[in-house]
Image (cartoon, rainbow, N blue to C red):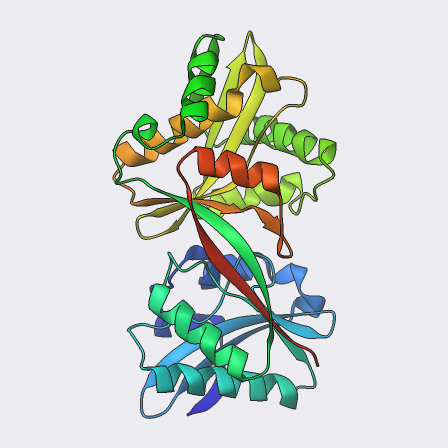
Length: 309
């Protein structure tokens, strides 16, 4: 097994169907400016065949996968034997050591590439990387109607929301609508002391790149709640941001928004709705866990593996 660097164009030709959008050349190049000196590296590993590749960005003396996304990891064109996955990660770790840098890899939740994720966790653990385990939730859109899978308390809150005169719509992804939803989510995050990782300009430009969907909930002419959803992978959509305005919790807007988003993508033929993590660096937000589980969401692990330089 050997590892080598290639141009973005060559990498895209080697791996035309990444397992999720965050491993695509287009997404990585769009965010190149977020790396130190724009330093993004496209690596492929192989023997007599190309086995896999990874995109790494340099930040603060470390190489990151991803460098500006929820998760990254390896890209392969076909299922790879355990030995090959071990070999790829071993070469990547040696590459980082030879460069005098550490490595930070956040792997996708298992729902995106179950076999590759499990093999990668095993390989990276044996190579000495330290894990942080986050809990990520998803909804199975093939389970049937939204209300068939929710908790009794969620059904009660949903009935209340339906009586409160709330209106949910999928809005055109134009800057003025995106900003309306961004401002709701930013206000929500600030009120809870949570970081907002993307600025408004980033949200708008990335939305155009990935063809994101936006949903807005209004009450008596006032914007109350919103959601931004990415088409993350084949049959999988991801809620990147969603939230409601402080002071309107009694309207139960988030329950109605969750139902609308679920049913929209179920009718569109999607398989899974990724709701993202309910932890921050491994520490659970219990209220968020309760909310996602009340929707019938299933938990899974998302690993971040770290090797210090």
